[in-house]
Image 1 (cartoon, rainbow, N blue to C red):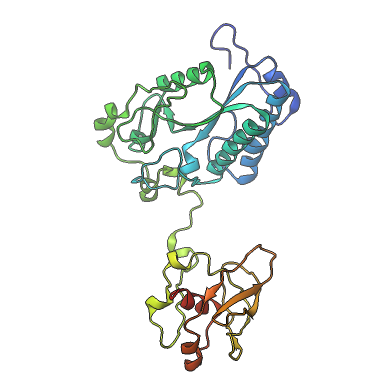
Image 2 (cartoon, rainbow, N blue to C red):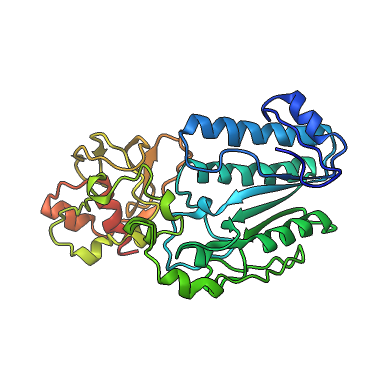
Amino acid sequence: MTPIRPGEDLGYGDLREVANVDRLLEGVDVLIHMAGTSVERPLPEVIENNLVGLHAVYEGARRHAVRRIVFASSNHAIGMYGVDEHLGLDCDFRPDGFYGLSKMWGEGIARMYWDKHGIESVCVRIGSALERPTESRHLSTWFGLDDLLQFMMRCIEAPKVGFLVAWGVSANTRSYWSPTSCECLGYYPTQNSEEFAAEILGQPNPLDELGRRFQGGGFVGLDYTPPERRPARTRWRPELPGLSHNQLCLRQRTCTGLLHLCSIATEVRPPGGSAWWMPKRRTGIFLGAQGWRNNSDTSRSRCATRRSFGFRPPTVRFTHWATLRAKKARSSFSSAIIASMSKR
């Protein structure tokens, strides 16, 4: 490789080595950082190039008082969203592999170095940076090179950015993401993949069925476990005589936060009643529930748990204990809570 224009310097080196980073950043005001592994690779390689290397760059920026870093994030940090979903910048991360996962980490370190050290960062979630789109997916993800150049110039020239995340995408009619522009930078894309739509849609789609369903395209199918080979998702319904399914309130929105229960046989002692033993069942979090403790009001009880997880169970009103005792139901701890909460 040789410099493209006069005044450019070209150097080689491993970014994990301090000497190379110091040589690169000496006298630099704005760094455009696009180095690293850019495809899906085994985790150890991704860690070394995209995590360790990026940390070395930001530490070098601290030493040399670099004002701003433009970090090349990626659309693969959100690649597990479906193609029918339209995303804003406030969407949750859903990486489609270790590469996308490293970009999540990269955006996190950029945020931290702004908050703790005052180094500005622009994290650009690059779509498909190509001279022209070549497949159907690119009609939504294309980042034309003219727009890419405009974006980088705005990153260099913008007076103040703090910490900023932006989509690296052209003004595509079929874009998965919005806004395609970035007002804070003064970036307004001018290219649109729709100009190539008729030609591209007349060609075979190179993606398989899975790649066509998700925004990450071909990355999604790498090391992917199909649904039929995943752990079975069974829905357990306790049997409590005298209580209907609706009274048990097994709908997830009602039970959220109530099913953090133990996975060992545990004594359940209702107020004024004989002890029962709950069966061994697997549940999400082991909190070590030990039984029941009566309050002054016998219609209320509070679960006595170990506090290692900081869990404070809610005080619940038990209106169905008479029914349960009369039926001599053998119920798990979760069943008792669900049934009681249904009548609060």
